[in-house]
Image 1 (tube, helix red, strand yellow):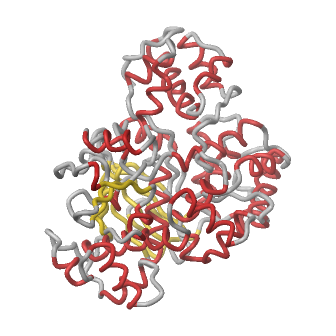
Image 2: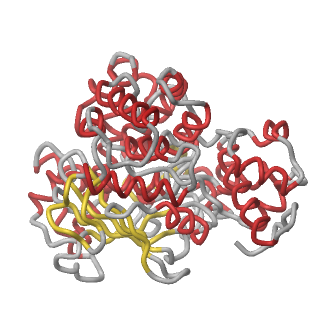
Image 3: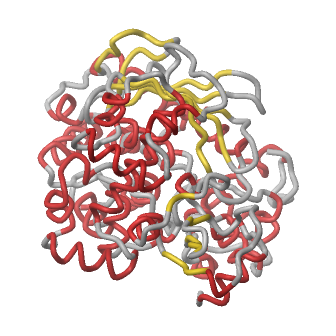
Length: 493
């Protein structure tokens, strides 16, 4: 996009570009999301920035009306496999807060200076500024939703000092932390965790996402409660500083899902939020996906019938790797039962059970040398599972938000018992690659037959083949229920 097309998006208040770029207004000193409902500023007074951090570095404060710091992330960072895309995924996960710029650079295989230069060139801000903008947003959430002392909030949000915290909040929001807390409209609920609104872009097929997660919910770690349309997905989290319990609701408002996080250490808030965003694929661009599929006579009607169908990721990367091996050549229900047995035998108990949630999923270290005799599966599968966990524990296989996808897939395929399906499934869900196709998957083959397509048609679905896989899985399910070889795109799911 050039600046003129960006301005047209602002004039039309086009929410498709929220999080893709930010609009700064010289005369007011504020920056907004493109869909801000305020009066459209004159073109001569507007500049555009590729990130909230760049707008803040230029001296602009966040709009109080449209809250540009709360927009979904750009889907571009999920698509891109280069250093900048990988860095953005790591920064969102809190790597800079935990390990500094040096730790981020080491993971990317570059020097800190190179990382600074590349991010500044594309985003108008370096890793410290990008992490700082994220900390400010976390601080605002805590100030508005909890009664924690301001000093505790400063360190929970990732700031190194209270002074740094105060200066940043004043710069970003043009208010002191005390003033920001005083303008909240509702009182926080005692002992009920941190309430959140998880923003997403465009339509969101919540029913299908909750169906997908409910079928795979592992006893002790996950549960889905309530009736369709008002369900709640709940799960335990193993986080860098402690554990947590997350809850996400199926029914939210325009552009968001309700959530609540209970954490043993609030320093994990940013990481926990990002893991939920990955799990529910909240930074996707459904408009781009639908547009790509629209011209295809087989997939186009399916995409139109289910706008906003997402490709769910995972909240715990090593967990999905273990579950993928458990699920090799068996049904989803059988894999879920095996995973529940594994959790009961090797999972770490939560400090206190929370409903049906009793454990966090076993770590790779705990499983690398475990006998796994509780699992009723072949010895070769047990050896594969132990080899995978040993590789994860030793770092031979790297599963993290900004991992090099090609290198990780190659490392997975080098392990005994890991084939193209398992490696591709992990690339799609654990590494968040939106362009993975699984031609050997039985559900994909049945879906292709149901819509009258072949594996070769998938080339026309790039770079969104992961979403095509989910459309085909749904089509295969529809065909089973209707009993026909072909599926009606409008058939109930």
